[in-house]
Image 1 (cartoon, rainbow, N blue to C red):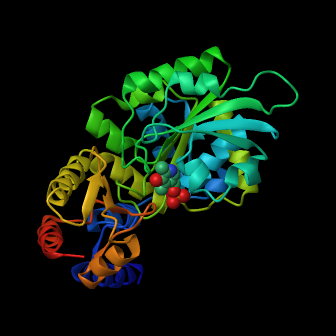
Image 2: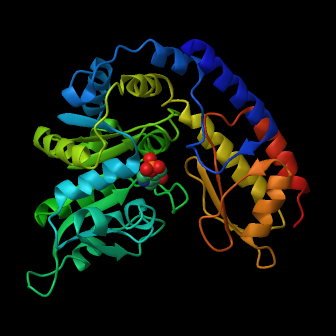
Length: 358
Ligand SMILES: *Cc1c(COP(=O)(O)O)cnc(C)c1O
């Protein structure tokens, strides 16, 4: 019965995929048949009681990868980020991050709501900032100012067009945080894209941070899930916060099995997504509607339209042609490549881009 239901879902998704090329985000992927197989064969238990063996296996695997002591599997990257911020701050304290950071720009004001903390934003270069930026934004010890307690960096930087931090840049921020008694959290929703593009190791990344959030439901292609990593005591505290947010879950092992499968099979293939994004960039360089393109490093292509074409007109035109894209800002268009974006779709997309005149 359950297997039958999965087949129907799979058939539907194949039919839909044939009709449209969806490049709005790398979150739109559906599990592959092999991933579904892994999910259906998972051993599960009640994770609120700490009894789901597959959740435990995913958490141990992810923690070991990044050289961290412990991990916690959650429903979303927003949840892992917000829990980390809550753990690393007290009410009335302040968080430093880039002005385009997901934790600030896309999490609904969650820092103020969940942590009663304020945010100090930095104007970085495509999401990347320096130790000097951090130093310039640490408040002095004075009751007029909130106490600065946490720095958050995002790698790859989503609003920076998938821009990657260099390992040395992350290490420099880590040193500055240590010297100034600040916690450092990584929003690593797309950290595997950075790791594949830059060639540094998961352990090198892990050693820079007190807390790390990784997403399994972006480029890695699972239907749901993010993992928070850190010390035993941090994860113990994080579990209390997850519970009070209503995020304790039961037989989550079915979803954790997808995560394990993705870590084993979908990391190295991110190169393909990066190659396809690069090919889209090359094609766009010859398109009349393009004013400029953020240099492509990973699976995100962000470009600016010429003044005479608005983003809503462009998105509508692409939709008429069976291609979905999004706009991260005024005059900007974003394409994100992913596991369900095939070479056949790529050929169709490039042909359409060449003939579209806005
Ligand atoms: C997608 C994303 C998240 C988490 O998003 P959820 O939809 O809550 O899983 C966090 N940070 C960045 C940079 C993201 O792109």
